[in-house]
Length: 133
Image 1 (tube, one colour):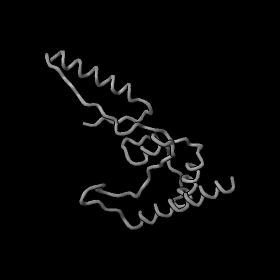
Image 2 (tube, helix red, strand yellow):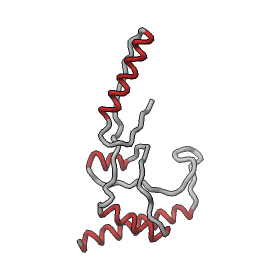
Image 3 (cartoon, helix red, strand yellow):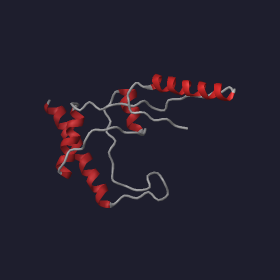
Image 4 (cartoon, helix red, strand yellow):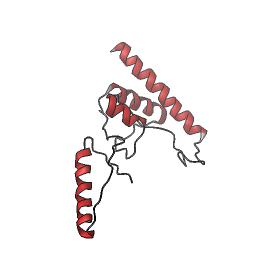
């Protein structure tokens, strides 16, 4: 199975919680339980003051009229590896779509246009800030 958490650096706490739970089950059932515990990616939090985050929020507001609220991302994607492994700020934002990663995945053209505009304006804003900064 999979356990997901949203607190960066919680790997040891999650492992301890799982070990305690399994020890209780093993004691109650007079069995031995062995597991293979692997971490596919740790949680991370975006620095809300990072220039990339500012560029994204400005672009999103320019396209949609509103900034996005900050909140947890209870899934792993490539951004997780960039953020936790390389320290690169990564924003997971895409089109409002249905059936993600299935045979019936679909996204309205308007959503694809919206995210393309947000991505392009983010790049322009971020690169412009680097040149000006």
